[in-house]
Length: 120
Image: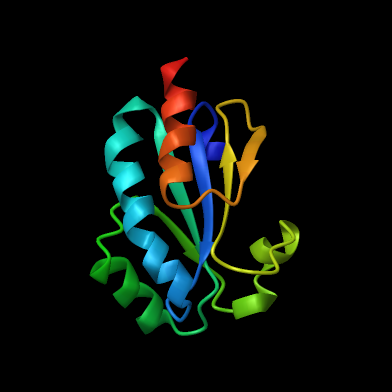
């Protein structure tokens, strides 16, 4: 994440086997496409255990953001443990200074918060 300092980042924890995650993915992709030119990035952290399913989901849902990681350790993911993730989908919106400004944004709430952030 330190490479993205100065950007607004959605840290998105998800998995290809998670129905609510897959339902939310179009909202994340739309937000990326809408706000990327203004300095928005999505850092996608998958809790998958199968590399093929993970990569297939990235392609299937047209997740064009370049930042995708997975330890392939499911719930034992070091990133999920470091951020205290106990359920997915789970998001954190981080401002350009590295401060968490919101958690758990989904659907219209994500778009509304990004609209507020980029209106400044």
